Image 1 (spheres, rainbow, N blue to C red):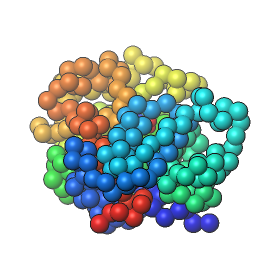
Image 2 (cartoon, rainbow, N blue to C red):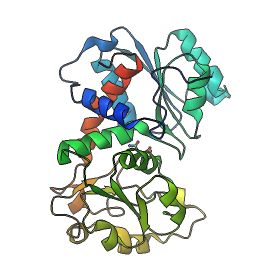
Image 3 (cartoon, rainbow, N blue to C red):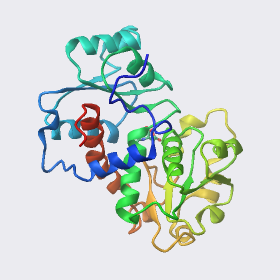
Image 4 (cartoon, protein in one colour):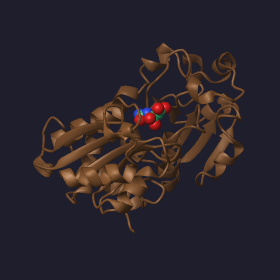
Length: 303
Ligand code: NCD
């Protein structure tokens, strides 16, 4: 079965023109000037994994469009009792869900839901697969700062192996011809990552990644995700941590991004996190209009 119309499941299969249309529409969205595009609709937020930014910004986005929201987290719901993903989906459809926003530890869970439950499904992060709304809000943030994708070089530094954010970002940026350099130790950035999307290069050297770079995207390096890997955190910090001195190797007007949650003292220093080039909180801020556009599109209201 085809996924329900209006679903947003991944960036890989989205056309560049559709992405631009959505980003353009997002620029017209403003949570401080609510628009009743989803008046009376019900947005179900189904979160099988922890989330702060993604969840709150989908909720604020939905409410800014006049929708009702219901949050279901695995703890405290029938998911804990062993109800299957699809049975949960059918149940949400039966209570009257108009849109389901889902975050799930398994890749493909949102796709399965969209194929079987006749409701548009928005992927809020599925396993190691994709995080399309994050890629869209990052693209929105890049375009607000750099005006166009033309000639841009983006360095993505950190745990790319475990990052759905990196995967969606590579798919999106490569559709616009952006030069993408992935940087980190081989365990976190395997050589095969070059096959992720056209225009992707891998380097082990931070200077190499930063030279000529317009956007420095940092990713979380989470200890719990590194079990069984030979990663020495002090060595990671010594080689890859973003410090003011390293940031100077990038272009003078380079912007620093991070999807969050950031770990100060590991991926970056506080000077960088709070510095003039950081756009980390701007990304969070831009998540709301971007997700307003995503939700309105799900209901066929993107014009
Ligand atoms: C990320 C995620 O959950 O994929 N965060 C986010 O949604 N902004 C990144 C992460 O957890 O490392």
